[in-house]
Length: 504
Ligand code: HEC
Ligand code: HEC
Image (cartoon, rainbow, N blue to C red; front, side):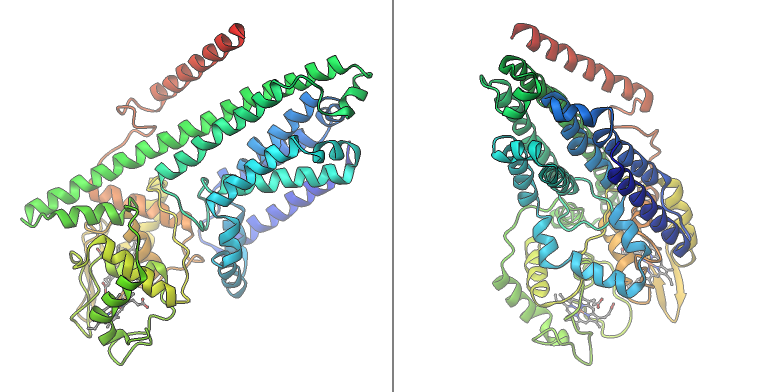
C-alpha cells in the first residue's frame, strides 16, 4: 500500500467534507447529496487505480497499467466534476474571496485553459504523447515521472470533461450539438490510439520486456491486451457518454418545442404572431445561429439607440445608469426582453418584442461587453432541474411578487411584477441574477446555480403545464421501459463487438 496516496485521498476527503459543511451552513438549501456520492465514487476510483491490487501489477504489465489509466481518465475525472467542486468552492468562500475567484474564472487565463478546442487538443496530445514518446518509458523507470504522468492524465482529463459537464460556473457553455460533436470527435481518436498500439509488431517498452522475463513475445501480447482494453472499453465508455448527451439533447429540444408551441399559441391569441418573435424565442433559448457579431455594427447601433441615455462611452447620464460594469446577463436580458431601448425614463419597462434582430442584438452585446468590466459568467440553465425543489424555491422566493402560479401581481408604488408566461428559460435565470427594476437581485449566495436551474424548470412547467413521467423522450414510455431500450442497445453493441472480435 502506498501511504502517501492514502494520505492524499484522506486529505481530499477532509477538504471536501469541510467545504460541504461550510456550504450547507451558509445556505438555506443544502448541497445535493448526489454530488457528495459522486465525490465518494471519485475517491473509490482513485483508490482502485492507484493502490493494490492493481498498482503493483501496473509496474509489470502494460494491460494493468492501461486499466489504471482508463480508471483515471474515463472514470475518476468525470466523477470528480460531477461532485461539483467549483460550485462548492464558490459557495463556501466569503463574498470578497468568492468575487475574486469569480473574476479569476472569467479572466483570460481560465478562459484559455477551459476553451473547448484547447481542452480537446490537449487531452488528445497527452493521450498520444504519453504512449508514443519516451515519457512512458521514463515514467516506468522513475517514480517521480510516473506521478507527474498521472497528474498530467488527470488534469487533461478534467479539463476535457469540464467542457461538457456543466455544473457550477461554466466559462464556455456549449449547446448540445456542440457537445455532441465534441464527444463524437473524441471517439475515433481513442479507438485509433488503441488500434495503433494493437497493430504494433514490436514491444514498445523495454521495461515490460524485462518484467516479462526478457520475453519480447510475452511483452507484445501484453501490449496488445492493453491496447484492446483501451480500444474497446474506452470506446464503449465514450459511446455511452455520447448517447447520454444525445438523449439529454432530445429531452431539452422537446421541452423547447413545447415552450415554443405555448408561446406560439399565446401570440396567436393576441393576434401578433411574427416570424421575428419566433426566431427570437429560439435565439434567446440558446440555439443561437452563429452570426458573426461585428463590433462596428454594434458600435453604430449603440450610437443611434443607446448613447443618448447611457452616454457615448457607456458612462451613463442623469437619465440612465452607466453600462461600464454591466454583466453579460443584464445586457442580454434587457435586449432580448425588448426592455431596451426604452422610452420611459422613470418607471417600469415592459417585456416587448425587441426592435432588433438576433444578429443586431449579438452585435450590440459584443460592442458593450468589449468595454464593460462586468461578469461574463452565464448561469447554467438546461431546464432539467428538480421540479419539486424548484417549486419550493419559487414559492419561498418569487411567489410573493409574481403570484403562486407566476401570473403576476402588484408590488406597490405602481410597480407590477409581471406574469412570467413570456420569459424564456434563459431570461428567467437572467432575471434572477440581474434583478431588473425593483425586483431584488439574487446572487449565488442566496440561490445557487442549481437552485436557479430548478426554479427555471418549475417556471417552465407553469408556462407549459405538461406533466412528464420522467425518463428520456422515447415517446414517453416512462423510465423503466426506456431503461430497457438502453440495455437492448448495449446488448446489441456487445454482439457487434464480439462479431468484430471473432472475424479478426
Ligand atoms: C431613454 C433612455 C434610454 C435608452 C435610449 C436606453 N436605455 Fe438602457 N436604461 C435606461 C434606464 C432608465 C435604465 C434603468 C431602468 C431599469 O433598470 O429598468 C436602463 C437600464 C439598462 C440596462 C441595465 C443596467 C443594469 O445595470 O442592470 C442595460 C443593460 C441597458 N439599459 C442597455 C441599453 C441598451 C443596449 C440600449 C440601446 C439599445 C439602451 N439601454 C437604451 C434608459 C435608456
Ligand atoms: C419584490 C418582488 C419580486 C420578487 C421577490 C421577484 N420578482 Fe421577478 N420581477 C419583479 C418586478 C417588479 C419585475 C419587473 C421589473 C422590470 O421590468 O422593471 C420582475 C421581473 C421578472 C422577470 C422578467 C419577466 C419578463 O417577461 O420580462 C422574471 C423572469 C422574473 N421577474 C422572475 C423572478 C423569479 C424567478 C423570482 C424568484 C427567484 C422573482 N422574479 C422574484 C418583482 C419581483
